[in-house]
Length: 485
Image (cartoon, rainbow, N blue to C red; front, side, top):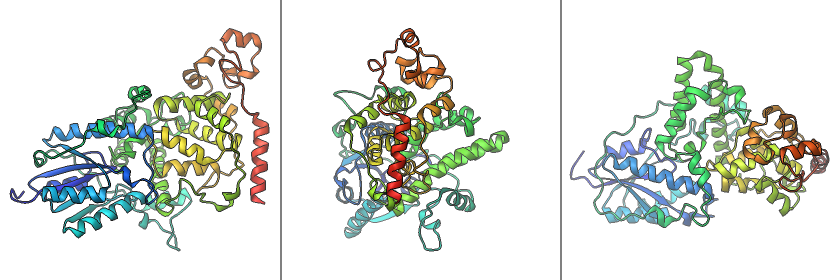
């Protein structure tokens, strides 16, 4: 390290960690002083298709930045926070500190890539060099193309192509030492950014459920591979049994990288061959995240435009009352209501139930998938720009590798099959918790005496179904036939 060299800047983005961070390692080795920067660029909204973070994701970001700052302080560094347009903030900071080089990790997200191009152009004009490290994806989009040069739109061949490229590079080691910061550098406070809710403070459930930050991410991964990975291939479908990894929000904000997860899971399978099938299933879920990111790379408007244009004239209904009932978990279908209440309380939802609740919105209620995508974007701590719209389009039948529109989940049968003892519903819909398992997924079939014994008053403390399943199914199929014709 040259003591007389100018300081260098590392620009943190969706990579809020110290391990497996190529840009941070390169910056560490380049300058006498290091500036660790995060920019809250809310001025970039609506440009290049960028969307502001939803409320739950903002809560996560605030806590993740606080955790990153604490980790940096252990190494004698500070996290500098600046708010504004990145292409203005970064050149200003470079001139303010006489920095001549900026490092960052590339992003394949269209909005983030556009932002980085703007920054690179602005820095080039003032003679500041940039060094960009490879993105966190397991395989860059340009490496998975068909003969026409387009991305793949069916998951199985996509994932086979990714796996055929071999294992991703080994993760880089955690940083143990960093150059000192630039003294007396102005930084915003997180409180000024107002990322957390105050009046009202609805984040109590999020605080009880999550520990944002790199340490929390690695603890989740360790606990998962040490326990819930067993029987993951089948158990992941049962919401009353916790076989989820709970890694998605940590991956969303880059507190852990996909290749760290990939190699840790592979190591677990090598150490315990009996886990191989479960690990492969888990890795395919990591692959689905990758698949959605590749879709977004080719279709930056994924969150509002149908991938299949045949759905552009679909006869969606407009029913604010039904939408509100779905959002609040008051549809009268217990498995749907349990999922929506879990989402509101924890900022997440079990995977099987996500499919059931989404299917209910677009097929039973015939409401536009974009309404559901917007609600999930605002309430999910793991709201990912690729996975969220990609999954909604998959359920709606208008996306890539989509479930056929005529595949309509029966919420009663889904509850009976995947929550057979009613534990999941009983937890999130406590007003039904005293009903026996045969009735908890269809309380309207209980006798008046059974309802009274369980303290259930249909239409009062728990709603009657807002739509009849059979009628709703026929209506959805008729709408689909009309669109296809």
